[in-house]
Figure (cartoon, rainbow, N blue to C red):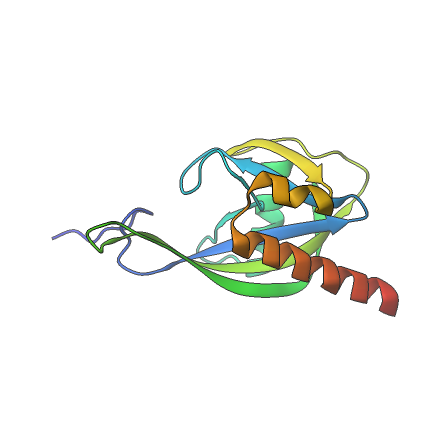
Length: 153
């Protein structure tokens, strides 16, 4: 019997890395081009590769999905994303490590990789996008961490 190594119905949780890119303009979001949550707005991110650190994975995903260069500020939180099927099988299970980052340079976000769109979103616009509640919570926490870091600088 061959072990399932795909993302659907995995034998164990997969590690995903999410990047909360914060700044005076709000947060950079991408429109997901693939499942899970295809077509919805989310944080740039994806699966961590073997031998890749969390920070390196975040920098890579930021570049791939938003065409931006960024500097990682630190850890925001670790979130579980579990999608069960009606029969009880788990279709997706990600352990998501979310870090906050700031953009280096003055480039504008553009969709790349498996992102269908990428843009700055003001914090007051988040509610209209119907984000996953954990995404909204992580964005708010990241902004608080970023503001705290600015106050200490």
